Length: 392
Image 1 (cartoon, helix red, strand yellow):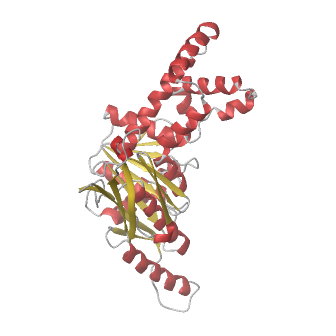
Image 2 (cartoon, helix red, strand yellow):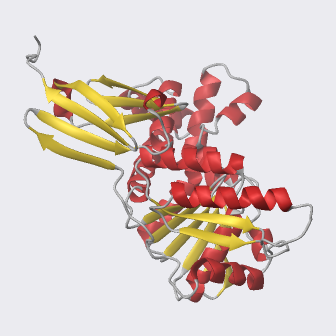
Image 3 (cartoon, helix red, strand yellow):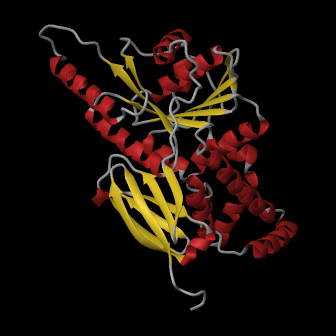
């Protein structure tokens, strides 16, 4: 299976690019599903076809789906919801508030992961194209498994064996399947972590950043690329959308066209190692298969849109005498932008308002953070053996 995720600042045209890519993929002979994870769905509008929370056939080989969190919870994870509701009621939370809190933080994004895990396991589609929410929500999605597990462990202050024992007793007396809900929750975490590993495999998953030639959009694209590299995801292309044509004369857009040309040059220089695809403004809103096919042709021509357009490994590790060298590619930051600490077998890397927990092998407990340095775009971390004795 190939997974292609489109991300970028809100309003740049992610939905159009995702829909056009999915259409091109389907017409190239791949059984393709395009999924919208954005709560403000516009995928139906792009195709001019009413989509639903289940895959809907648009044309041969092409299916569309607009995710609905509550539909997904009701269909697949009702025991989890009942578990959370009951625990919050035990803790004295009123019914209406408990109903709202029963939606675990991030579960709306998690439902996308869980659908994709289902399709990946069942081999139902060859290609999945994801029309994601704006950049911040996409990063929440991609870092979700660790965050969700931490939150639930805080919300459910019971040991595993205790929960199962109590849960069975509750089920016998009230009929509420707490023990099954807890098992379902653990299974849910396993699926989230499985699909996150799949997303981290550059031969399976590619992320494509959509931008416009504007200052605020460009800055967010740079931040998104840095954070995606930080979390180990492969960005294989940048799409610059809605480029206005240059034309002569004294007109309202003279200054805009001048700055647009400057930003286009800046994008090409910053992302010179990546394919940069440029999409001209077609002078109208993009709705329906005919216009989407036009965009798809601009994007890919006669090439397969599902091919991996670029691949690199943003995290590298190698042995050294007495320790290890870990290198992480972090573009578009300065040495003053990051902070690094080590706690046992875990490195904690903070970049501006983002935090990455890097879990090392257990033996790293006995390695110390000897040094670290930053030479753009690489952060180099030296882990060295210590003379500390176990228990000493």
